[in-house]
Length: 103
Image 1 (tube, rainbow, N blue to C red):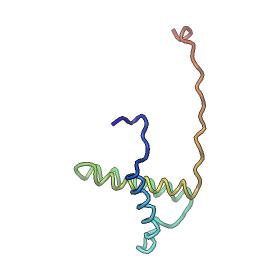
Image 2 (cartoon, rainbow, N blue to C red):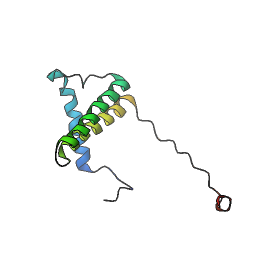
Image 3 (tube, one colour):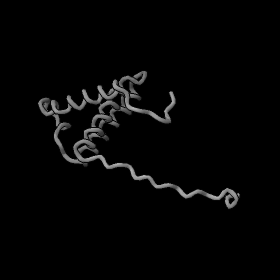
Image 4 (cartoon, one colour):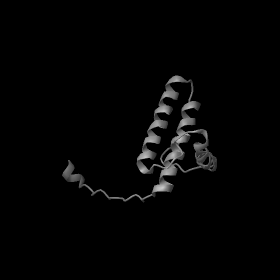
């Protein structure tokens, strides 16, 4: 797979949207993941699910269990951007080095 220019596929978008729809149901289950704690809460939730993804990768053959957790990470990150804002990337162009000076 060429990873230089990846774009979201409809299937991935659907899975993230399903996870985003699922998050509000967590409070009914007595979980605090759904409660909005701002950026710090989103970061903490991301860390928890990243740790779960790592543990799943270590404890299970194949990637399925860790990818299940990574989907949660993706949805949590998207949720943070939707609720907290999504600043654009600022590009800084690196100066061009003179190849003769470098030699």
